[in-house]
Length: 104
Image (cartoon, rainbow, N blue to C red; front, side, top):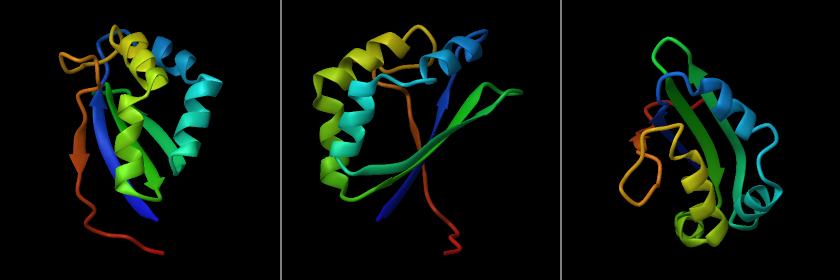
């Protein structure tokens, strides 16, 4: 299992809408994540800065990368675009974090 972590940035005043959108997350998106080997996916919010910290365990980097090209992921990105900083293709502006410590 591979561990991945990254940060996102919410737009000001969008925290409540972002949280509502994830509770519950679209069943089709959840099924796609699971089908592509994603497990133990959590997102945490730093209210002071508006930053989101995401952690996910994946079975394979290639399978994880394929998720971005699925129709459901593309639709999710467009739905989240008004709430967070994004790239021109509507994908979240994600800052990958390098693991420096792990206690198993």
